[in-house]
Length: 164
Image (tube, rainbow, N blue to C red; front, side, top):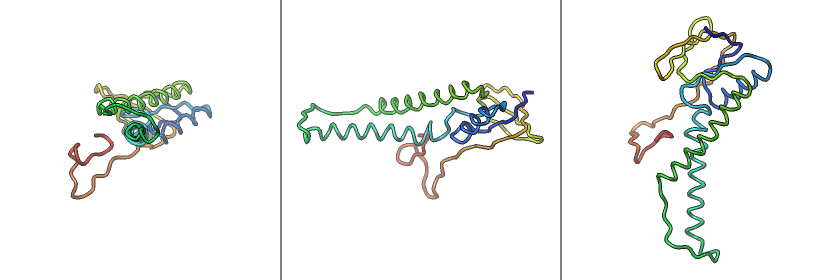
């Protein structure tokens, strides 16, 4: 069983910043995250949506280029490439967060952590393996989930969450 000064459940903005700060103060730290470093904001919310907005802004500039004396041909967009760019932006930043954790010697475990008695965290990884982590201190930074409004059904076409 691995033992730490601080175990952080959740690798989003609160979790990874708290972990880095604790490591800077000389603590032995682990972050347990079930998906990717950066949480919803970085991977599915704020950052990808800003990337999509930037694509839309550029598209609109091109559509109205003649107002600036610029002549363009037929303008179109490839939605798959737009989404691909958005994912690429998020991936690069998530790798940056993972690099920061590694640089500060913060251990990073990908898996679902469940807090049990005596500050013991049982972690189940995607490949089905389990491990137990013990920590003097535990930070719960478990993030958020999308809220589906009553009467609406998420269908991935008309009604979507940040995951679609």
